[in-house]
Length: 310
Image 1: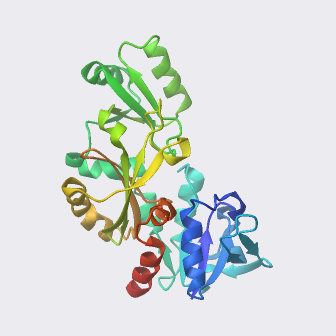
Image 2: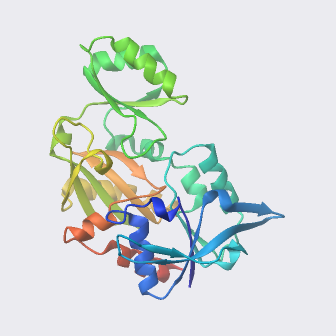
Image 3: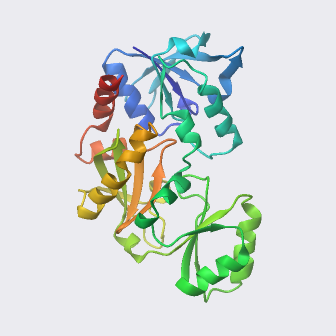
Protein backbone atom coordinates (compact mmCIF):
# COMPACT_ATOMS: atom_id res chain seq x y z
CA UNK A 1 0.00 0.00 0.00
CA UNK A 2 1.31 3.42 -0.94
CA UNK A 3 0.72 6.28 1.53
CA UNK A 4 1.51 9.92 0.69
CA UNK A 5 1.60 12.35 3.61
CA UNK A 6 0.83 16.00 2.89
CA UNK A 7 2.51 17.75 5.79
CA UNK A 8 4.72 20.51 7.05
CA UNK A 9 8.33 19.42 6.55
CA UNK A 10 9.04 16.37 8.69
CA UNK A 11 12.11 18.07 10.17
CA UNK A 12 9.78 20.44 12.06
CA UNK A 13 7.99 17.66 13.98
CA UNK A 14 8.37 17.03 17.70
CA UNK A 15 9.28 13.36 17.76
CA UNK A 16 8.07 12.85 21.34
CA UNK A 17 4.53 14.04 20.75
CA UNK A 18 3.67 14.24 17.06
CA UNK A 19 0.65 12.28 15.89
CA UNK A 20 1.70 12.32 12.22
CA UNK A 21 4.91 10.53 13.16
CA UNK A 22 2.95 7.96 15.18
CA UNK A 23 0.74 7.21 12.18
CA UNK A 24 3.79 6.93 9.91
CA UNK A 25 5.66 4.59 12.28
CA UNK A 26 2.69 2.23 12.43
CA UNK A 27 2.23 2.33 8.64
CA UNK A 28 5.90 1.49 8.17
CA UNK A 29 5.62 -1.46 10.58
CA UNK A 30 2.93 -2.81 8.26
CA UNK A 31 5.32 -2.54 5.30
CA UNK A 32 3.31 0.27 3.68
CA UNK A 33 5.36 2.55 1.45
CA UNK A 34 5.54 6.12 2.76
CA UNK A 35 5.99 9.28 0.71
CA UNK A 36 6.50 12.82 2.02
CA UNK A 37 5.46 16.02 0.26
CA UNK A 38 4.76 19.63 1.15
CA UNK A 39 1.42 21.29 0.30
CA UNK A 40 3.25 23.79 -1.91
CA UNK A 41 4.51 20.90 -4.06
CA UNK A 42 0.98 20.09 -5.28
CA UNK A 43 0.34 20.71 -8.97
CA UNK A 44 -2.98 20.72 -10.83
CA UNK A 45 -2.57 20.02 -14.55
CA UNK A 46 -5.32 19.13 -17.02
CA UNK A 47 -7.61 17.69 -14.37
CA UNK A 48 -4.90 15.60 -12.69
CA UNK A 49 -3.12 16.22 -9.38
CA UNK A 50 0.63 15.76 -9.20
CA UNK A 51 3.22 16.35 -6.49
CA UNK A 52 6.95 16.16 -5.96
CA UNK A 53 7.17 13.35 -3.41
CA UNK A 54 10.10 11.86 -1.50
CA UNK A 55 10.17 8.26 -0.27
CA UNK A 56 10.24 8.43 3.54
CA UNK A 57 11.63 6.20 6.28
CA UNK A 58 10.89 7.08 9.93
CA UNK A 59 12.34 5.89 13.24
CA UNK A 60 11.96 6.65 16.95
CA UNK A 61 15.58 7.80 17.12
CA UNK A 62 15.41 11.36 18.44
CA UNK A 63 18.70 12.39 16.78
CA UNK A 64 17.83 11.16 13.31
CA UNK A 65 14.18 10.19 13.07
CA UNK A 66 13.64 10.37 9.32
CA UNK A 67 15.28 9.75 5.98
CA UNK A 68 13.99 11.12 2.69
CA UNK A 69 14.83 9.57 -0.65
CA UNK A 70 15.26 10.99 -4.12
CA UNK A 71 12.32 13.27 -5.01
CA UNK A 72 10.17 12.36 -7.98
CA UNK A 73 7.17 13.93 -9.68
CA UNK A 74 4.16 11.59 -9.51
CA UNK A 75 0.44 11.56 -10.19
CA UNK A 76 -1.11 11.35 -6.71
CA UNK A 77 -3.84 9.12 -8.11
CA UNK A 78 -1.16 6.39 -8.05
CA UNK A 79 -1.33 6.50 -4.24
CA UNK A 80 -3.75 4.40 -2.20
CA UNK A 81 -4.11 6.90 0.66
CA UNK A 82 -3.30 10.59 1.17
CA UNK A 83 -2.95 11.73 4.76
CA UNK A 84 -3.66 15.46 4.89
CA UNK A 85 -1.65 16.41 7.97
CA UNK A 86 -0.36 19.97 7.58
CA UNK A 87 -1.04 22.24 10.53
CA UNK A 88 -3.36 25.26 10.37
CA UNK A 89 -3.72 28.25 10.13
CA UNK A 90 -6.79 27.47 8.09
CA UNK A 91 -6.34 30.19 5.50
CA UNK A 92 -6.91 30.53 1.75
CA UNK A 93 -3.70 28.61 1.11
CA UNK A 94 -5.05 25.69 3.12
CA UNK A 95 -8.48 25.94 1.49
CA UNK A 96 -7.01 25.99 -2.03
CA UNK A 97 -5.23 22.69 -1.45
CA UNK A 98 -8.50 21.06 -0.38
CA UNK A 99 -9.94 22.11 -3.75
CA UNK A 100 -6.99 20.54 -5.57
CA UNK A 101 -7.18 17.24 -3.67
CA UNK A 102 -10.85 17.05 -4.54
CA UNK A 103 -9.79 16.21 -8.13
CA UNK A 104 -8.17 12.90 -7.14
CA UNK A 105 -9.89 9.79 -8.41
CA UNK A 106 -12.12 7.92 -5.97
CA UNK A 107 -9.64 5.02 -5.71
CA UNK A 108 -7.32 7.30 -3.75
CA UNK A 109 -8.65 7.86 -0.23
CA UNK A 110 -7.92 11.25 1.36
CA UNK A 111 -8.04 11.43 5.16
CA UNK A 112 -9.89 13.54 6.04
CA UNK A 113 -12.19 14.14 3.07
CA UNK A 114 -10.93 17.48 1.66
CA UNK A 115 -14.44 18.74 0.88
CA UNK A 116 -15.50 18.21 4.47
CA UNK A 117 -12.27 19.64 5.88
CA UNK A 118 -12.94 22.78 3.85
CA UNK A 119 -16.51 22.96 5.19
CA UNK A 120 -15.63 22.15 8.81
CA UNK A 121 -13.09 24.53 10.37
CA UNK A 122 -12.47 23.51 13.99
CA UNK A 123 -14.43 26.28 15.65
CA UNK A 124 -17.26 26.39 13.10
CA UNK A 125 -18.32 22.74 12.71
CA UNK A 126 -19.06 22.76 16.43
CA UNK A 127 -21.78 25.37 15.86
CA UNK A 128 -23.88 22.61 14.25
CA UNK A 129 -24.32 21.28 17.80
CA UNK A 130 -25.54 24.36 19.64
CA UNK A 131 -27.15 22.25 22.37
CA UNK A 132 -23.71 20.83 23.29
CA UNK A 133 -21.81 24.14 23.28
CA UNK A 134 -21.35 26.80 25.93
CA UNK A 135 -23.07 30.14 25.19
CA UNK A 136 -21.28 31.47 22.10
CA UNK A 137 -21.26 34.40 19.73
CA UNK A 138 -19.24 34.76 16.52
CA UNK A 139 -18.99 38.34 15.31
CA UNK A 140 -16.91 41.43 14.67
CA UNK A 141 -19.61 43.69 16.07
CA UNK A 142 -18.19 45.54 19.07
CA UNK A 143 -21.62 46.25 20.57
CA UNK A 144 -22.52 42.55 20.59
CA UNK A 145 -19.19 41.67 22.19
CA UNK A 146 -19.74 44.29 24.91
CA UNK A 147 -23.25 43.02 25.62
CA UNK A 148 -21.92 39.46 25.91
CA UNK A 149 -19.20 40.63 28.29
CA UNK A 150 -21.74 42.50 30.44
CA UNK A 151 -23.85 39.33 30.65
CA UNK A 152 -21.06 36.90 31.56
CA UNK A 153 -18.51 39.29 33.15
CA UNK A 154 -15.56 37.08 32.16
CA UNK A 155 -15.08 35.86 28.62
CA UNK A 156 -12.62 34.08 26.36
CA UNK A 157 -11.97 35.50 22.87
CA UNK A 158 -10.64 33.17 20.19
CA UNK A 159 -9.41 33.54 16.60
CA UNK A 160 -11.51 31.24 14.39
CA UNK A 161 -8.71 29.78 12.31
CA UNK A 162 -5.67 29.40 14.57
CA UNK A 163 -4.21 26.37 16.34
CA UNK A 164 -2.79 25.21 19.64
CA UNK A 165 -4.34 27.96 21.75
CA UNK A 166 -2.50 30.68 19.83
CA UNK A 167 -4.04 34.14 20.13
CA UNK A 168 -6.71 33.20 22.68
CA UNK A 169 -7.25 35.79 25.42
CA UNK A 170 -9.29 35.97 28.63
CA UNK A 171 -11.06 39.23 29.46
CA UNK A 172 -12.88 40.44 32.60
CA UNK A 173 -15.52 43.15 32.57
CA UNK A 174 -13.61 45.08 35.25
CA UNK A 175 -10.29 44.98 33.34
CA UNK A 176 -8.52 48.22 32.50
CA UNK A 177 -8.84 49.51 28.92
CA UNK A 178 -11.22 46.68 28.05
CA UNK A 179 -12.50 48.37 24.88
CA UNK A 180 -8.94 48.98 23.70
CA UNK A 181 -8.05 45.32 24.23
CA UNK A 182 -11.06 44.12 22.21
CA UNK A 183 -10.46 46.65 19.43
CA UNK A 184 -6.82 45.58 19.17
CA UNK A 185 -7.92 41.94 18.93
CA UNK A 186 -10.36 42.81 16.15
CA UNK A 187 -7.65 44.79 14.36
CA UNK A 188 -5.28 41.79 14.48
CA UNK A 189 -7.91 39.30 13.29
CA UNK A 190 -9.45 40.00 9.90
CA UNK A 191 -12.24 37.43 10.27
CA UNK A 192 -15.10 37.23 12.78
CA UNK A 193 -14.01 36.02 16.21
CA UNK A 194 -15.50 33.54 18.66
CA UNK A 195 -16.49 34.69 22.17
CA UNK A 196 -17.55 32.38 25.00
CA UNK A 197 -17.86 32.71 28.78
CA UNK A 198 -14.76 31.70 30.72
CA UNK A 199 -15.47 28.18 32.00
CA UNK A 200 -14.02 27.67 35.52
CA UNK A 201 -14.25 23.91 34.89
CA UNK A 202 -11.14 24.24 32.73
CA UNK A 203 -9.01 24.19 35.88
CA UNK A 204 -9.89 20.48 36.09
CA UNK A 205 -8.83 19.98 32.51
CA UNK A 206 -9.79 20.21 28.86
CA UNK A 207 -10.37 16.76 27.39
CA UNK A 208 -9.14 15.80 23.93
CA UNK A 209 -11.18 12.80 22.76
CA UNK A 210 -10.00 10.99 19.63
CA UNK A 211 -12.68 9.54 17.37
CA UNK A 212 -12.07 7.16 14.47
CA UNK A 213 -14.92 6.73 12.03
CA UNK A 214 -17.26 8.31 14.58
CA UNK A 215 -16.22 6.10 17.53
CA UNK A 216 -14.23 7.37 20.55
CA UNK A 217 -10.97 5.43 20.94
CA UNK A 218 -8.99 7.40 23.52
CA UNK A 219 -9.06 10.44 25.78
CA UNK A 220 -6.40 12.80 27.08
CA UNK A 221 -7.15 15.35 29.80
CA UNK A 222 -5.00 18.46 29.60
CA UNK A 223 -4.52 20.43 32.84
CA UNK A 224 -3.59 24.11 32.47
CA UNK A 225 -0.21 25.15 33.87
CA UNK A 226 -0.19 27.32 36.97
CA UNK A 227 -1.26 30.86 36.11
CA UNK A 228 -2.51 29.81 32.64
CA UNK A 229 -6.15 29.38 31.57
CA UNK A 230 -5.33 27.62 28.29
CA UNK A 231 -4.78 23.89 28.53
CA UNK A 232 -3.14 23.25 25.15
CA UNK A 233 0.01 21.15 25.45
CA UNK A 234 1.87 23.72 23.35
CA UNK A 235 1.41 26.33 26.08
CA UNK A 236 2.37 24.08 29.00
CA UNK A 237 -0.76 22.01 29.61
CA UNK A 238 -0.04 18.79 31.48
CA UNK A 239 -1.51 15.61 29.96
CA UNK A 240 -3.13 12.80 31.89
CA UNK A 241 -5.01 9.74 30.69
CA UNK A 242 -8.75 10.00 31.20
CA UNK A 243 -11.83 7.83 30.84
CA UNK A 244 -15.00 9.07 29.20
CA UNK A 245 -17.83 9.98 31.55
CA UNK A 246 -21.54 9.82 30.75
CA UNK A 247 -21.59 13.37 29.37
CA UNK A 248 -18.56 12.72 27.12
CA UNK A 249 -20.20 9.61 25.69
CA UNK A 250 -23.40 11.53 24.99
CA UNK A 251 -21.43 14.19 23.10
CA UNK A 252 -19.62 11.56 21.02
CA UNK A 253 -22.87 9.80 20.17
CA UNK A 254 -24.54 13.10 19.25
CA UNK A 255 -21.90 14.02 16.67
CA UNK A 256 -21.19 10.51 15.31
CA UNK A 257 -23.74 10.63 12.47
CA UNK A 258 -22.48 13.98 11.19
CA UNK A 259 -18.83 12.89 11.26
CA UNK A 260 -19.58 9.70 9.35
CA UNK A 261 -21.82 11.44 6.84
CA UNK A 262 -19.08 14.00 6.13
CA UNK A 263 -16.41 11.28 5.87
CA UNK A 264 -14.41 12.81 8.72
CA UNK A 265 -12.58 9.63 9.64
CA UNK A 266 -9.98 10.97 12.10
CA UNK A 267 -11.21 13.64 14.52
CA UNK A 268 -10.21 15.12 17.87
CA UNK A 269 -12.87 16.89 19.92
CA UNK A 270 -12.30 19.20 22.88
CA UNK A 271 -14.58 19.01 25.91
CA UNK A 272 -14.57 21.27 28.98
CA UNK A 273 -16.90 20.07 31.71
CA UNK A 274 -20.18 19.25 29.98
CA UNK A 275 -19.44 21.41 26.92
CA UNK A 276 -18.15 20.57 23.45
CA UNK A 277 -15.84 23.44 22.45
CA UNK A 278 -14.08 22.31 19.25
CA UNK A 279 -14.16 19.58 16.60
CA UNK A 280 -10.64 19.26 15.18
CA UNK A 281 -10.54 17.80 11.67
CA UNK A 282 -7.49 19.36 10.01
CA UNK A 283 -4.61 17.82 11.98
CA UNK A 284 -5.87 16.13 15.19
CA UNK A 285 -3.21 15.43 17.82
CA UNK A 286 -2.81 13.54 21.11
CA UNK A 287 -2.19 10.00 19.85
CA UNK A 288 1.38 9.59 21.14
CA UNK A 289 0.60 11.11 24.53
CA UNK A 290 -2.32 8.72 25.06
CA UNK A 291 -0.17 5.69 24.25
CA UNK A 292 2.80 6.95 26.31
CA UNK A 293 0.52 7.32 29.34
CA UNK A 294 -0.61 3.70 29.07
CA UNK A 295 -3.68 4.21 26.91
CA UNK A 296 -4.63 2.49 23.66
CA UNK A 297 -2.39 2.43 20.60
CA UNK A 298 -4.59 4.68 18.46
CA UNK A 299 -2.22 4.59 15.49
CA UNK A 300 -2.79 0.84 15.28
CA UNK A 301 -6.56 1.29 15.60
CA UNK A 302 -6.42 3.99 12.91
CA UNK A 303 -4.81 1.74 10.29
CA UNK A 304 -6.85 -1.33 11.23
CA UNK A 305 -10.12 0.52 10.72
CA UNK A 306 -9.03 2.53 7.71
CA UNK A 307 -7.78 -0.49 5.76
CA UNK A 308 -10.95 -2.42 6.62
CA UNK A 309 -13.10 0.46 5.40
CA UNK A 310 -11.51 0.77 1.96
